[in-house]
Length: 303
Length: 306
Image 1 (cartoon, rainbow over the protein chains, first blue to last red):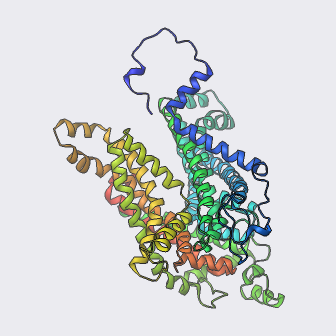
Image 2: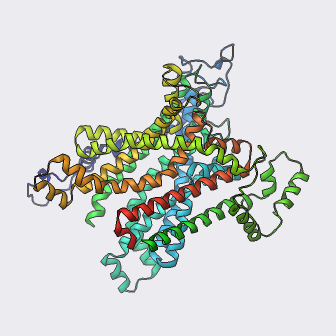
Image 3: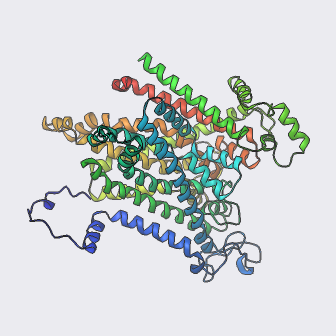
């Protein structure tokens, strides 16, 4: 993936003509194919979430008459129910489509919460140092010490189960890593000469913090936020799997997995779809985040 | 060294106090009516009032916290409303079961993760590296509960190689340990790969090669020693992730440990048990991190002076 090879540098041209957008795009696609695959998956996920009613005309909570056999068992995949039906006779395909909504909603909002808390605390700790730094980092250590799923379980149990409480719980528990990374980055940037120069010129604290340091920590923050969306989607599925996330009949991939576990012996088709949907979605965000890191890394080294 | 250990212990103590404050606030300050929360929605009002008086919930919060801490220091985590038994006893009874699973899962992830990390680092930028690295990314993206279910379906239900129940000793341990191992291994693979590549690029490795040391000696004698440091650090931090993931593995495989205890407590609104397990596991994580930090001080003397 690297462009370090000698072939890129050998011909000493005059100033190269600016390449067209298309040419640059196809070059970057060849260099970082994984980012584009990740972006494609994420885009697809968003399209599915937004247009679920147009992709399947069925209702995800409806229990049609022919959704169950006469003996009450679910229907295997057929022409009408392409991924079969679940233990209540609901269409699995439609439920998987609609399940993307909860995943995306929780993934994005939880990441936003952890982004705001993590960046604010990391920036404050790194910038002011001293006692403020110690206090914030001890607090961060404390939050990071809690086993995530157990603590989220407890928090949702106290707040009550709902989509909103699930993303609030995940969001306020998962900012620790963000705070640490931002703090580390701020400590490094603070020592750069141009930051010292800004100080010497008498720039205000606010200006240095938001106009000088913040733009320099945005790269790692962007990478971490992208990765955290995937992580938070997994967390939501874990909570719903444990039956403390989203309430039925709202379809969630996590609760579909736990239903599949109950019906494994007679309806194994319910096993695959929600799990694969989860895996592919999370993989999409991880590919995107990893790829962004690959793209941003050389930048942060040379500057 | 003594001062280093002392500072670490002090730091851990502060974190433990922080943990107790957060758990305390979660039960006694966040809900609008903690007494109602503790006894559940179905209990009659008289019971709620009795609990409020008994637990001193009518007192100011700081006073309540002091009472709470007194109980904690005496090893009293409260009483389960479902089992009518001390929470500490419930936790103690299940600790061994979870411990066995945790050790199994940990061994599985190291056995899978470390060899793959070495493999990808030594074949960096070759097709085999891309394949294994892509697989590692899939491993990180796998929902552990789903992987467990798929393995359970294929190996226990369909092919019947492993038992479906969790009561057949070592044979029951393999699938759940493997489930966690596969998802956890990927982190070790990626960590070891990047740290090995970093060390491989250093001057002293080039010197070793220039002296004519063979590749095997370079990798095992010179590179691994330094490349393993971040891996060792993570292995200590991993206990937190392990305890989180194990809740899901335990529920999937019907394994009767701490995770299942907390899971059942949530379903029955058994707040003392939920908080007890959260508090206990968090303190366990702090203890492990402390141990790793102290070990680290022995391995790498530079760290003591930071």
